[in-house]
Length: 150
Image 1 (tube, helix red, strand yellow):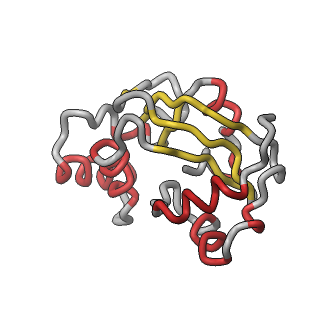
Image 2 (cartoon, rainbow, N blue to C red):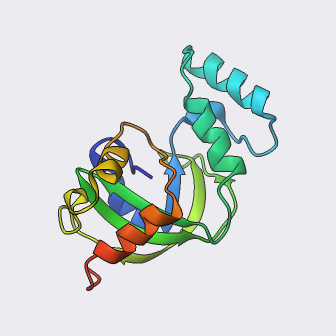
């Protein structure tokens, strides 16, 4: 997951033990259907883009014990595990949250994406908040991760 534009919320995610998505205009989506999420998102933001699909994925497809990473500025910033179900917290800038346990954290450029296979680099540098990774891609990240925790 990307912790905001230029990874600006990296420290908030790590200190708060969360991953999160923006779109505060939608409110709590936990009891909404996929169509309701789409309609509320499009009405709130007056756009026809597909970011609402990431909200649905965050709500429905992310599971407790799934692996997660934070990335940005051409670096992997943290590796962890999802520990909680979806929660809406309107006190946060990115109010759609899931609790997360961070196993390893890294300073910017300590774990550069450039050490990974070019296909994985491109995938992580794609302008998207949520990026799905295969088991093989996770294995590659595990192989190249720095050995000491920051």
